[in-house]
Length: 152
Length: 270
Length: 103
Image 1: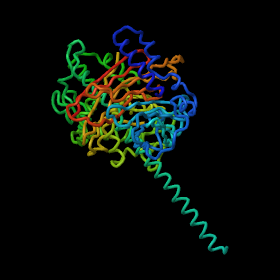
Image 2: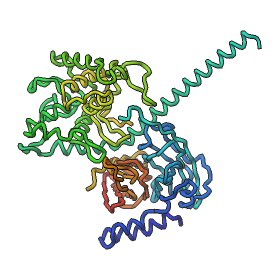
Image 3: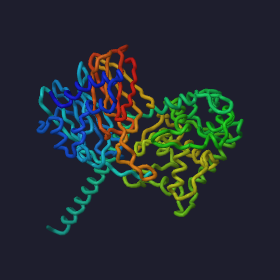
């Protein structure tokens, strides 16, 4: 069972307690969010923290994104995983101070598909990790971030 | 190698290098266009339209009235296509007005609000849009799919257009800039931003079809009054008063130059 | 004190296309205000997507997701009339949710 699922199951219990007012919101949060993973400072640590230390390069993960972003505050990324039985998708912006940006789990017929807008501190490779059948697969795209024009 | 063929080789290399450089520039342009269309497609702008709708219907001011009877040029309360037909001349105010000056007029006449109060916070920030910005988002959205057709036939409209045109080319301020300094010549750029030639229809049309707009670089929703104000600031000139004759004149000049373009709704820009 | 939130959901060939717009500062904790003081972090951490009452997607996100987040999801089996509900939870314990019916 991966770290995300473990914390998610804990979260279900915490969420119930939270909803019923029995648990202080901040304590519930600690249970529902993989703090260690999001605190990783390198891409390698981020991968390790989601249990994906040596993901296999895969052409079946499609990343649709512009190669140039006019501004790093909003970089649009569309991800489709054609790896059969993909259960989760993680997004890592390698040069960000904290590379792990998001991790989504899909169940009950949801397709392993995600459109998300991320912040990029500078030009960087954007890596997607898909988990399927207990294994991890990965693909990456390089996105250049330009400095805006008039500053207006 | 003989001299003639060495020259030929050099010319060929130069030609390929230029073609290569051109190809790279074209690729960059294509990727930037992809960026622009993807941020537009995944834009939160509709949320600001919803906020604007709430404000349009909200009873405010000493008269405890909403803006729902405001006449934006198509009749009281008629919003469909109204933004696309602004700026225009309004008989009741005897002047040419753009959306924001017209909204101010309605805030004062329908809601009984003072100019001071209604313009206290015309430009918002990333945490909270101003009333003008929210209302602009909502009203502009009601012109989606409508061809831009600002007022251009009334005497006053023609006069204000001419004023706008003169202002566009008027050089002043510490840097001796005019709008034309940046926006009237082919190939001008600031860093990676292509500067549109705003006094020609071809370049002005896509611009007028995508304002007001959400700026992702600062997460703020900005209107034409802001855009003109900020251009003056960037030219190191005094910023125009909100809704001033000068700002409306420039807005009319730009919109008339870009007329005919199908309005795409509030835009999303870097 | 949550801003507006909106879902647009359509279905085609047995696949629901779900787009959600959220208003949230997604403050990283790296920015300073006009007085030079650091603006504390404040961002959505959890996103839950439900189709007809069943959770179909669960996300954990960081402060590096853009302000006013917009997400798109796809779900098999979604058809017009089905109910979509999306909720979020942030670092302050604040929540918001929106629901819609697939068009």
